[in-house]
Length: 356
Length: 276
Image (cartoon, rainbow over all chains, first blue to last red; front, side, top):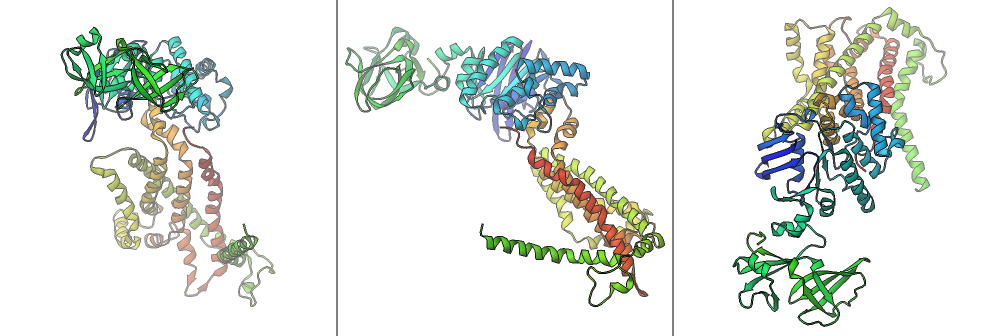
């Protein structure tokens, strides 16, 4: 059960948009395709839906190979980024459309529509037309239309990206609850890493058509396979310092910067001399007072978020972002002292970007 | 806005209206005037006693009734055919990509047939119709008018179809509908203003067409109104009264249709965009 993609490839003219993608989605799982624009995630989704034909590779839904099956018969439902609500039909007719096309009895259609509308709390909107609804309401109608026929899988193409920030957060939680209630396999496409982290059971990170990493959100955050994944996930993004490793004493060196490496990191580096050090902002500690072994830095600018403060520092010609508690204050241009928690640091190969 | 400009606007528009409508009004009055009044000097704009003798003459005494029926059959028939064929072609051209930009070239080629002066085909068409034994039949006119209206229908409807977001048909197909079903249930209702506008245009063109009706019809059985009315000009005299009566009646169906269809032309503007 579930969806399985094997060596999936798609080309448009000369460019390869999806390159040899293989992954298995378990039944009932919520999988997020995450990546920047143009990475091939929407194209992959459309291939699963049947709206695009793969150039090579297989798509299997519930074990059945569906490459030649048209979208009508794949028993999957899709929520489009633009919602694609039928403008000339009422909300009730929009939701009923998939059932009408299957020629269900009118009474049965009526029942299903009411139940689905109740589930999404849109009963009061049933007689309205899409043009009279707000963004959030339209999104619920699009969801209702997808849910009403209990398909094998949901495919969602950035459904939250047209909503304002607050509504997006609210709908994120509701979507997750909904999926847990319905237990339907869901494939969700987004470029927002926060959505991916919070919604997915597993996240597939893609870049330029290639799968970078397919793992649980926590694993992707704590053990990124390469620099791209490390950089893409997490906000503010990971800090990267390029340098090389001295063997004695074992330290990571870059210009005037010298960091004594932990044993773990040293083992990881496997003798590699030039590499890149990655450290997340929350693992960078900042203090206004000089402390032993902490490095000197100058404040470039601070961003007060209320619950925390982002401090952007200049350190030995490197720009580093640090996350500090909300009450931390420092003037632009003032001197501060910085320490790296190297137990949370990563080393990346300079050329391939792979994590060592 | 400057009040003087507003007044000027109204004066100029008023004048334009008068210039455009004066001949129509004149034709209207001629059809109701006794022959004596028709040529009175100074012209009797309003003060005459009306008569229906010309209408009786045209429709009961002569064959204008038949011409009217022929015109209706031919115009409606060719419009329906052109719309049916052209709309499907336009949808295909709007939605499907062909290799080597063939779809663009095809669209241009279809439109280019409209750029040719129609008179060039008058004789060849007559010969074809003669061989098909279709001369002097309404069918021949329906065929010819459909051929002339098709490029326009394709070009117009293609533009309207291009405006409908692909998302909607894709959503319909994922929901379980066939492509044709999605076309009929989702796309067509959204282009009704386009259909209405195109239909009006095709009807007007077919209704007013003179050259091919003249070439391809010979007797009252198949003659359409334009040919019939023009035929009142003979070497024995010009029957202005009957001609005007027929002219007035000829205007009515097109006006009525345009009025009926007007609300569809407006409806499309208020449907709004797909997303918020």
